[in-house]
Image (tube, rainbow, N blue to C red):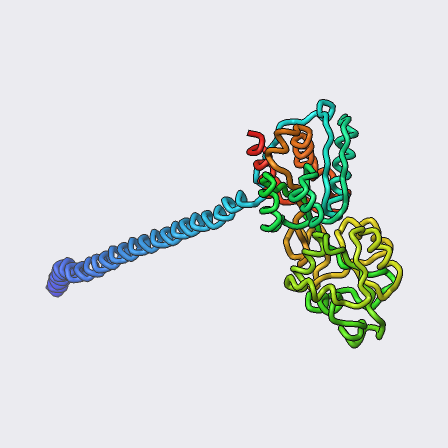
Length: 381
C-alpha cells in the first residue's frame, strides 16, 4: 500500500514537472526574440551613415575638377606675350629698287659737301667704278654748308653731301634757281670727341663740361680742379662744316659766336689736319666724324659723353648724345636729266649698308632707308 502511494506521488510529480517545463520556455523565448530584433534597427541605422559618406566622397571630386579651370586660366597669360613679338621693328620689309648695272651707266657725276660723308661717298663711288662704271665721279670735301652753297646757289653740283639736314634758307636758295632738293638718308655718325692716348686725366665729359672745354675755359683746371693746370688746345671743324654746325647746335645752343671766341682754337675743313693737331699734345682736344677716329683709334681715345661711349649699340639704341644722320641731296629734275645720277643714288641706297661699317659709320634704320628709297622711286615717276 505504501509502495502504491509512493508510486502515485512520483507519477504526480512527473506530470507536474512535464506541465511546468513547457510553460517555462514560453517566457524565455520572448526575451530572445526582442533582443535579436532590437539590434536589427541599429544594424540598419549604420547603413545611412555608410551612405552619407558617399556624398563627401563625391564632394572632393568637385574640388579636384575645380583646379582644372585655373590651369586653363593660366594658358591665356602664357599666350599673351606671343602676339607681342611681331611688334619688333626688324620685321619691317625692306624696299627694293630696280637693279642697276654700272656697266650700262655713262656720263659724269659731280658731288660736293660734308667732310664726314666724304669717306663713305668715296667708298661707294669706288665700288661703282669697280663694277663697271666708266664715267668720272668728282667728290669735293668742303663741308656741308659750302656743299649746299654750290648745289643751291651756283647750281654746279649734282649731289650735295651733308652731315646735317638742309636749312630752310638753303632750301629757298635752291628753289630760287629752280631746284627742289630731295633728301636721301644714307647712314648715321657718332660724332667723336677725342684726345691723344697720352692724355690720362679725362675719359668722360658732360655737355656742360664740353661747352667750357671748347669755349669758356682757358686751362683744363678751369673746368675741373683735378685736371692739369695747362692750357686747352682746341682743334675743331671749320664754320662751313656740318659737323661744326651740329656741335654748335648741340653744345652751344646755336651760339656760334661763343664757340669762335675760344682761345688756342684751330679750325679746319680737313679732318686729317684735326687728327694731327690732337695727336700733337696730351692737352689737345678735338671733334670730328667717327670714321676719322676709327682710322686712328690706336693713337686717339674717344671720350664718353654723359657716361655713354660711341658704339654701334649706343647709336642703335639712341643713347649716345652726339649721334647724327648723314645725307645726300639731289633733285628729281637732275635725276631725270642725268640718268647716271639716278643710277648712282640707286646704287648707294642699295649697297650703303654693305660698306658703311667698314668706313666707320653706322647704318640708318630700315624705316629711314626705306623712306629714302621711296623718295627715289617717287622722283623717277
